Length: 78
Length: 553
Image (cartoon, rainbow over all chains, first blue to last red):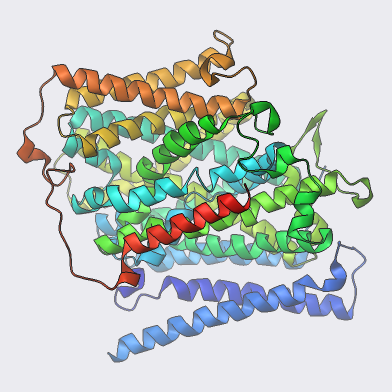
C-alpha cells in the first residue's frame, strides 16, 4: 500500500478528508436553505437531498478518516 | 445556452477540490525519490488501491457524459461496454496475463514486447502508444473545455489552461503516485457526485421497473433483440458485440493498454497485482447504475411532455452529451451542483493525468532510455519523466487547439483505439501463449494490423467501400462499424504474425522463460486461504456478470 512508506499518510486519509469537508458543506447548505428557502427550485427539492446526501457523505468520510488515523497510530506503536 | 448555474457554495467546493489535488502533489513530492517511485508509485500499493486506480484511469468524465448520452441514443445495449465488453477481459488479464507481466518486472507494455520479441517491436508500439496518449489527452482537454463552456458558460481558454496546469503540477511533482491518489479521490467523488441523479430519477419515475416499462423494447433489452440488427437501437448483431466489442476491443483495451495496466503494475506483490483487475471488475459492473440508468431516466423524461425535460440542441441536432448535465440541473440544489460539477472536473483531470503518466513512462523507458540515452541513471530518468510530463501536457494543449480548429478530429477517437489496441492484443496473445512466434512475425503482424485498421476507417469514412461490407449486415451503425473494424484489424494481425513466423528465425527457448506459457515454471507461491485467492473472486465476478446479463436479457 502506498501508505506503507514511513510517515506517509494513507490514501484513505485524503479520501476521508475530502468527503468529510465537502459533505459537511453540502449538509450545512441544505440546512440553511431548509430554514431560508431559495427562490430557485429543483425537482424533488421537498425531499431535501442536500441534507441527507451531505450527511451520508460526511459520515462515510469520517469513517475513512477514523480508520486511517487508527491504522497509522497502530503502525507507529508497532 | 448555459444549462447549470453556480452559486458561491458551488464555487467553494470546486475551489476546495483544486487546492486539494495540488496539495497532494506537493505532499507526495517528498516521497518521490527514484524513477520507480515516479513511474510505478514505488510498487507498494495494496490490491484495493491498485484496483480502484485501475478502474478510475478508465473512468473519465468524457466516458460518463458520452455513455449516458449513448444510452439515450442506443438504449440498454450500451451496458455491453461495462459487462461483456469489459469483465471477461479484466478477469483474463488477472488470471492468465498478469503473472507474465508482473513476474518479468517490466515497467511498461512495450517493455514486455522488447523481452518477448525485439527492440523494433517495442519502439513501434512505444511510438504508437505515445502518439495515441497525447492525441487522446489533447482531444479530452478540448472536449472538457467544450463541455464546461456549453454547460457552465466557462471561458474556453481559461478552463482548458487551468485544468492542464493543475494536472501538470501534480503529475510533475510525484508522477504515478499523485495520479493514483487523485484517481481514487475522483472515484469517490464520481459516485457521491453522480449516483444521486439515479436515485432521484428512480424516485421521480416510480421504480426501476417503471423506467423499463416506459421505453420501447429496442431500448430496454440487452440481448433479446440482438439476432436482428433492425430490432435494437445500436443496429448490431450479437456476433458484432461478442467478437468486436467483447473479444477484440475489450481484450485489446483492458489487457494491453498501458494506461490501465500500469496501475496494476504498481501493486506490492503478485497476488495484489492479480487482484487489482478483479476488484475493479466489481465496480465496473456497478457503473451502469450511474450511466445507463441515468441515460434511460433522461430518455423516459424526454418522452413525457409533462416532465418539461429535454436535451440541449446544437442547431437542429440533439446534444446527447447533455443528458447527464441536464439531469444534474433538474435535481441538484445549491451545493450538490458544486459536487456534481466537481465530479465531472475530477473525471476530466484524472483522465488527463492517467494519459500523461502513461505517456511519460513509455517515452522515458521505451523511447528515450531505449534509443536515445541507454546509460541514463535513475536520477536522470526521474528528471526526464518530469520533463516528459510537461512536454506531454504542452503537446496535449497543442492537440486541443488543433481539435478546436478541426472538430471532425473527434471522429478519429474510436479509430485511434482500434488502430493501436486491437492488433496489439493479437500480438500479446500469440506472444504469451505460442512459443514459436518470432520477432519479425510480431513486428510485421502488428504493422499490418495497425495499417489495416486505419485504412478500413478511412475507406468507410470516405465511402471507398460500403460500411455493410465490414459489418456483414445491411442494417448497420457507426458503433457496429467500430466493433467490426476492430475485429478485422485483430484478425489480420493474428494471421500475418503466424504466417511470417513460419518463415522467420525463432528466439531461443531459454530467452523466453518467464515470458511464454509452457516455458514458465508455474510457481505455487505461498498458500493463501480461499477467500484471498484471485481465482475465487474471478469466479464470483463471472457469476455476477452472468446474473446481470440474464436479469436484463
